[in-house]
Length: 64
Image (cartoon, rainbow, N blue to C red; front, side, top):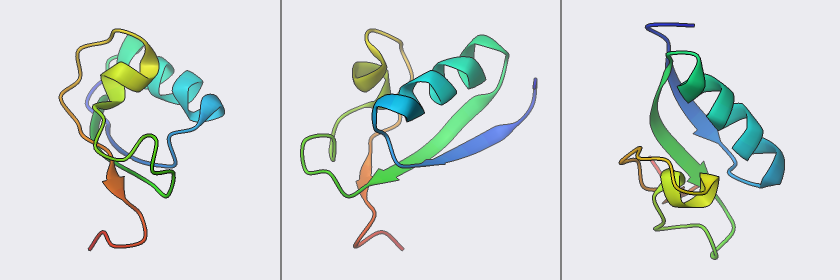
């Protein structure tokens, strides 16, 4: 998985497992979108529970 650059569409409970797997196996998350106003604007590291990622979730309804 090293070298893969992942864009995460949806950042709910199941996606947390996917994002953790990507990071723990050498991949990089380069972007993320969701429609849930509770996660829009949050760093995905915060959603995942303490990881340092630096990718902020954008609104899937307005993202270009």
